[in-house]
Image 1 (tube, one colour):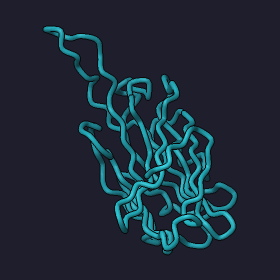
Image 2 (cartoon, helix red, strand yellow; image 1 turned 180 degrees about the vertical axis):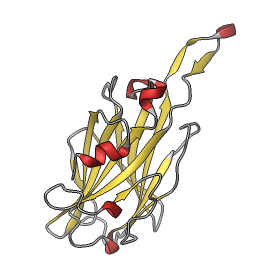
Image 3 (cartoon, helix red, strand yellow; image 1 turned 45 degrees about the vertical axis):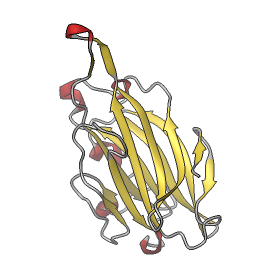
Amino acid sequence: MAISLVKGQKIDLTKSNAGLTNLIVGLGWDPVQQKKGLFGFLKAEANIDCDASALLLDANDRLTKDGNLVCFYNKKSKCQSVIHSGDNLTGEGDGDDEQIFVDLKKVPSDVAKILMVVNIYDCEKRRQDFGMIQKAYIRVVNRANNQELVRFNLSDNYSGKTALIVAEIYRHDGDWKFNAIGEGAYAAHIDLLAAKYK
């Protein structure tokens, strides 16, 4: 059974799960339902294209290599330890909207953490922010047996924010841990958010 975390909580991943090496990091969200529309039906906001990304950072929280940004236009890290499932343009439907696969055995020794973030694509032109998103979450699944290990529901009010620093998977004393961050930020594009870590 998955452990449900709240903002700021940390949990061990590998110490309590012997042999855990391959992870699925699933991220999901839904557009907020508008008030009643024509004929009294609820209708969703216009399509909001959220993009999940992973930044492979060093011990100083720096993105030292361009290939260490895994996102919709660079789906694999050069070391092949982090792979993006592909872009979901609408966030519609149940389950994960985007997934990032992590092979902990392949993560290079100079990578201390993998930061998971979400941006809204073309947010300025579309005038969209995370106040228009609901039911956002991140979860970590053991890829070997499909068991959900951790879930973090992002329940804060992120109105006006166009990026979310969701969580990180980080090294600690030879093991890997998960930190539920849940901070809103402003970055009109993933490259602008990534630049803050250079």
